[in-house]
Image (tube, rainbow, N blue to C red; front, side, top):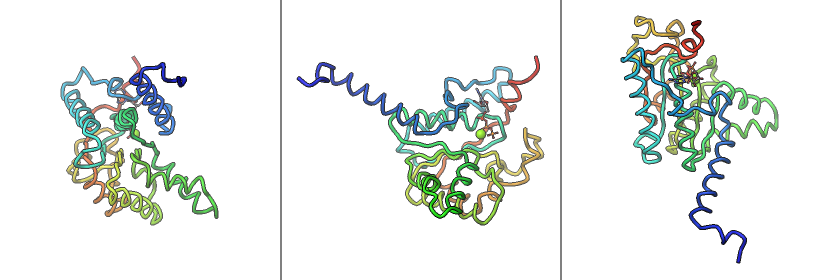
Length: 240
Ligand SMILES: Nc1ncnc2c1ncn2[C@@H]1O[C@H](COP(=O)(O)OP(=O)(O)OP(=O)(O)O)[C@@H](O)[C@H]1O
Ligand SMILES: [Mg+2]
């Protein structure tokens, strides 16, 4: 009898699935601060019914995305809204659910990804940096955090457009977050509404990623707009 045959098949399969999920989670490069991000650790504010409803709706939309995956009509997810409203938390929560279900995904901070790709171009044989570019194109699910958080140059715009276009052409899921406003999401009202962080809202998503990448993002992603809630970081650090 083989060594493993004494273990019931269902148990063995469960064990294999669990260790694969663990491997995938290690491979996903989720930053330490978000390793426990989940729907369970996402709290709804009890002191503001409008904010509570708004965040609950957002959470349900993200949960539905993970439930339908990979049969979603739009393969990607774009979370857009002011700083500290929980975009990265929810994006990671979604990625972790998909990873637990056996899918492969990688977290990339947008700035860091661009820096790594650029380093690869300036060296003659920057294999590890080229690797970052290849992974951004090829990985099953790419989580691109803080999209557009980089000053614009032709090189940045071309690189983002290349990544987004490749993923768009091949219907490869992209989960992205951004706190840049977009007139078609915010209706250009953000400054008038005085939303948290609105001082930085003059630069739009299109300014930072270009027209072509923005156009593709809207077609390939379910766009989820964060409600106007208080920055969670500031709320948590409030002096009591
Ligand atoms: N509703 C919430 N419940 C629990 N933790 C939250 C909630 N919202 C945010 N957080 C936590 O607050 C911190 C900031 O949230 P997060 O990074 O997701 O914000 P963000 O919208 O991505 O902000 P930015 O635009 O600055 O990147 C994180 O540590 C996150 O886990
Ligand atoms: Mg974020």
